[in-house]
Image 1: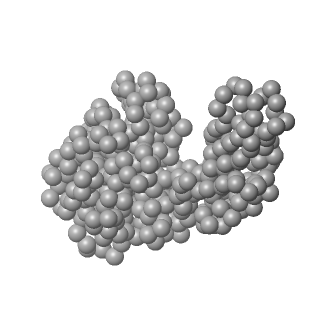
Image 2: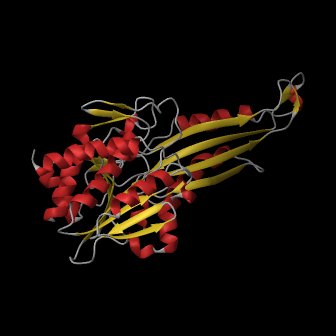
Length: 361
């Protein structure tokens, strides 16, 4: 068996080991300890641990630095905590999102001491919960220089394709007022829920933008995701609230997107009504002109498509670091009872990244 075959065999075993370590958000110490122990056997790496986050870096010896990043946490188990293994696949929570990607990062860190570009490996915590808990923010608050790079690649599941940039996401609440009355005498009040008809029609008829940026087509979206209102079966409701999600392509900023949504909804609002942004995360540009990324795409003939969801590539884009998503596993299986990752996908991503690390641009 060749050295590369051994590496790939060990990589699959390592992925299985990681899947077997539960790491629900805020309960990641065991998997982080496991990663730290493995990295301690690589004397060519400078290792920094900040809470449940680990950054491993090679010394500066080239003009370019590549950052590989991945989150160690998973969502809570929901009937998918039974781990299964075959010759070709691993099933289990976090297998696709994103312990296959973590295994690739860890294996590269351990198997490739001599690199053509400087390397930074970032294993960070709490990506699957509210952004304020994200481990990247903890690293940035303590030692922001650890996150400096010329390109960041996050091992999110992309089926071995490049998913460029990402769309931003915003959530609004729209509260409409009415006047309470008894349902036997509704003319004495005003039904706030009935006021939703025009708003819902406007959102349903909203024409989403589909801009093409650096050859990637993004698809904006506007959807009502929650409706609240009413207090009893015999009371005309005097208040109702919609929660609305908006996906924003990376050719515009959140401020512009917010103005558009306000212009769409304000014709249906009256005194006392409220439209608020309750959370927002910015989009990220594709960054396909980055020479390291462009070389990897060309050499391995990788398919490139827009990332329609939001990922932490936006964190790096905001810091001026081009970033892309590239990892094993099918994102549509993430968080499902059938979550799995295939050996072939893990190996493909590993070899593509290894080529860039060892040969450079």
